[in-house]
Image (cartoon, rainbow, N blue to C red; front, side, top):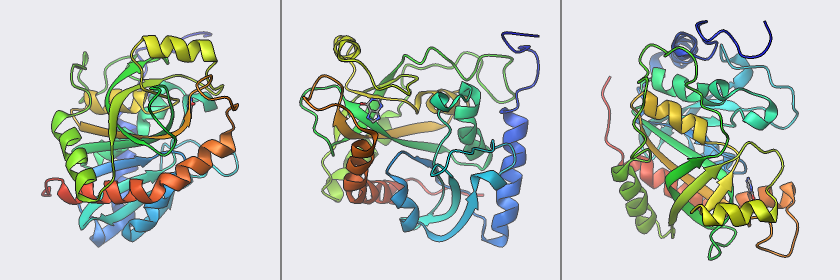
Length: 290
Ligand code: HPA
């Protein structure tokens, strides 16, 4: 068959595969396993948070059942199990982007695994271009809402067991968790912006005309990830929080062309503030049992 996959086939990136991956992770953690207060995905340039995770068990993505074998050098990801801010967490340093050719369901699969591991909260982070003209590189933005201009949805196909078929998206980024991010930011003196994130497929950066369009649509920051993950997290009933690291002014808003290396460097310069914020946020999350 060519074209669309048979929509009644079980997904390779569905609930059963996530359960299998979760079993493997728990087995590796052994007696040290504790249900996480949050599952965290670390965006481009923000992987340094992994070094703040205490008593960390590091599992290469290639060992996790169901994760694809990715051959691009320098993008090898790791799943970490450990403690942050005195609380148990699971973090993924690295993600699967749709611009790499992955389908939306795979881009969101790690979130299914975090859910299967018992995380009630999903915390996403990403690098993004600033569309709001008052944003500067190095700003951190709490995502208040998103625009899905990837025109893909990871829930297409038969509903996975445990998924809401028609998830409500009227409050995708949990109000209480947003307030908690702001409280954590204030406590560690990390100023935070708040705004709307727009997910595009990439891998090209936007044209200036596209950025002007996004500006008119009410977008504050633009990136190439996160949206499929948040959709799946909401379908599973997880509470979602997300932070964008503004690495550059979006195309056309600054006289210099966009350069991936500069984008990554900006991510690294904001890393200490990002790490302080996330550590304090996790410290303030409600404890979980089990
Ligand atoms: N556009 C899209 N994705 C990005 C950008 C951008 O300007 N910067 C970092 N990720």
